Image 1: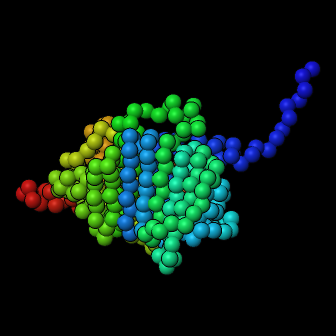
Image 2: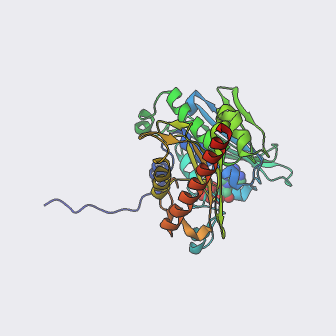
Image 3: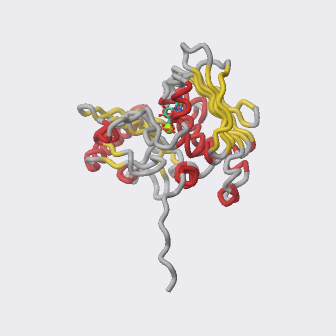
Length: 341
Ligand code: ADP
Ligand code: MG
C-alpha cells in the first residue's frame, strides 16, 4: 500500500501565483485591475501605456490619493485592502475593488514597480518587486498619485505565457477594457498610449455623449435614444440604439451597475426581450446603460474578477430595465414617426 498523501499549507508565494491565475489571465486584466484602483483612489486623470500588447510593459498612472510608505508596502500583500473592514462591508461595497488581491497577484507574476506619493507628503515611495520578491524600497521624488509599471508579465509562469496571443490580440483586449471604462467614467480624464503613440486623449468632466462622439464617431449619436427611469432609489439611465442601429453581437452593450462594469443574465434577458420586438433575429442593440440601486441589492462577490453580479431582487431589476428600454424606444419611434409625417 502506498503512503497517504501528506497535506501541507502552501507558502505565500505559491498562493499568490495561484490567485494570480484567477485575477490576471492576460495583460488586459492587469489594466482592468489597475484602472479600477485608480478610480477607487479618486483620480481625475489616468494614463494607460502599453508596449507590445502589454507583454513588455503595462503602465497605469493616476493623480489619485496616493499612499504613504507603510500603506504602499501593505498594498502588495495578499488580502490587504483599505476598502472593507468587516464582513458586512462586502454587502454594501461602493468601491470597484475590495478583495485585496490584485497588486499581490500582479506583482507575483511580473517585474513590478509601484511609485506612489500622497499630495501632502514631501516625497514618495518606490517599491520594486520581482516575481513576488521585494527587491527594493526607496524614497522617490515623484508627483502626487500612483504609477504602476508591470514588465514582462508571466515571465516566471511559462505555462501562462504560452497562452498569450499575439501582441495585436492582447492589445485588442486592452482597448476593450479602456473603452469600457472610458464609457463608464466620462468624468475622469483618460489617455491611452500604445507603443509610445497616443491613441486616445479624453478630457475629464465630460458626458457620455462626448465620449461616444470621441470613441465611436458622432454619426451613431443620431440613432441613440435616452433611457431614463427612476423608481425610489433605483434608476436606469443612459443611451440605447433605436431600430436603425444594431450589431451582430453584444460587444457594444456597455452596462454599469453602481458604476461597475458588470453583467448578469437577467439584464441580457431584459434587453433581448425588448429588442426582439424591434430588431431582426440575431441582431442586437448598442447600449450604454447605468443601473443604480442600493448597494445591498447587488452581490458583487460572485466572481473573482467581479465581471458578473447577482441581484437580490433579480425580477425587479429585469422589470425596471424592460420598462426603461420600452419607454425609451417608444418615445423615439413616436419622434421618428412625427418627423416622417
Ligand atoms: P483592492 O483594490 O481589492 O483593495 P488591490 O490589491 O487592488 O486590492 O489594492 C490594495 C490596496 O492598495 C487598495 O485597497 C488601496 O488601498 C491601495 N491602492 C492600490 N492601488 C492604488 C492607487 N492607484 N492609488 C492609491 N491606493 C491604491
Ligand atoms: Mg483593486
